[in-house]
Length: 282
Image (cartoon, rainbow, N blue to C red; front, side, top):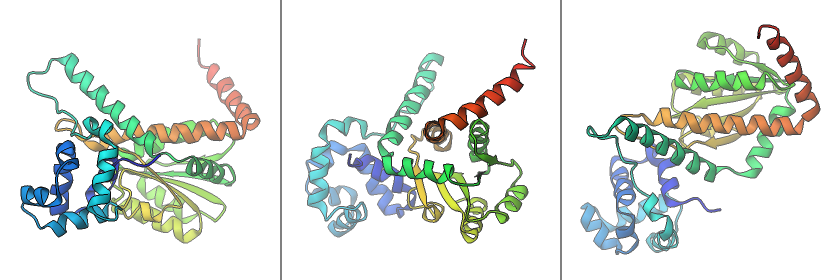
């Protein structure tokens, strides 16, 4: 399934120049108008040259404006979704606020699911399953996702490692080998700490799986396999918080796939974990 223009823009947005972001914002806010206007009309509206809008469509991967416009028209039924998620308003009651948070999460999961590729999921699961050790890396909010992944993969037959301390993460990455696999998580894909981890892992020859929201980020370029999490940004809720929901779901998917690849070993591991935990339950 082809990726929609909306998702293309969202995955590339942080790599756009200020002028390109202005074009992107206009397209997201006025999809119907864009799909039924000439390039000259749109350029005049944005007070830019026709060639600037033309080059923007090329950057999205289209042959030019005509190709871009045709794609917009083909996505006509999806156009109502190409809009900025409504922000929470001061006069919203508590239920409305909560519903908007849920709506944002649903949108995040729906968009991220559209970007999943069977081959990537299969290859990532094979990478993890064939590795001697699995290491999980992330800092800040991404560390929470890494910890959750550690909690899950402990239930598999894989030897899994994760530390919440960045300095220990640096020590761990220095000890990786070509027989290991690293899952590196970062919302922006631009954190200096995380990029350094990825570069260090690359030098060891370890296999690298990246989970990020920015397809063209420095971190994404270092991954052997890259999973993109899409999220809605609102005034009262950061994009990073929303992306966490999608990243957790990507990790959940890899965990479930890996379990089915190694059902017998995984079941043995789960049984051991349950047996020990049951000893402290009434």
